[in-house]
Image 1 (cartoon, rainbow, N blue to C red):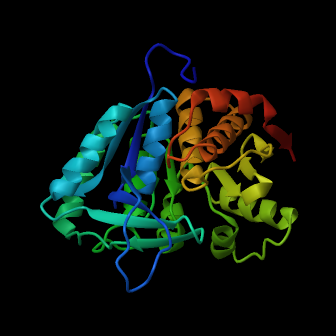
Image 2 (image 1 turned 180 degrees about the vertical axis):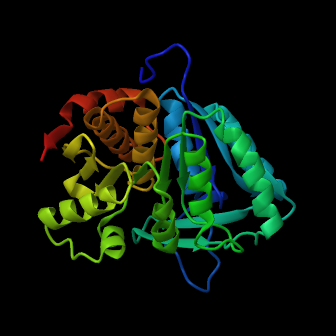
Length: 318
């Protein structure tokens, strides 16, 4: 078991742009033709919800918030119940979006259609922030991920991070572009940029490990407690007050790598909620991420896979 106490820690996840993810399997996708779907699967989607599911599987109490709307929003909430995830979304009348993923079995090509979703008003966001402040009071860790709906600007996450920080709780921010650039001004506890994002944040080339370390240290020095850099197949790098650690994951038979970064965020949320060391948190997050790649369903892993991988994760202090 991951949770060491009898009372699970509460992780609050934020998905401002939740969706219904629809996966269609076809044989020979033809543009401009009628395509018959061989298989289809509907799941609640959005990066924050792909953090919620593995965190819940690992034994945490998970409360999911953000925006949902209409019948589609009700479906998203219902679909989270089998995972034991409690829904505390702010409801709108407009329908939540759908994201369609078409997998062509013949040509091994994936095509995606991502709906923009509803447009928020300032009144909607203020209403959500009031609800969010209340939810934060009971959270051990807050994790916010992904894009934001139309109507919100680049300061959306910045304002939410500040609310969490004012409450004295750890907060993880996993987003990109302007949302990340402005979000880190509020000094979230942890961010997880990839190489392109850390280049954007620091202006450094980051063509070698030394450059990457220096870039991560520069962000850490500005007030972000833990900076985790995704290195793809090369593992990941974590910079914090405890030092600099690199995680190397063993080769696995990957089935689906979509959402592995979100599963890793779930691992970090668990580690922060339990007060684990940075080294142990990085090990567990890496094992959960790798275990999720071994399963077809996005944002899902099996504890047995994770437990087998855990001792195989190599952590090096740099």
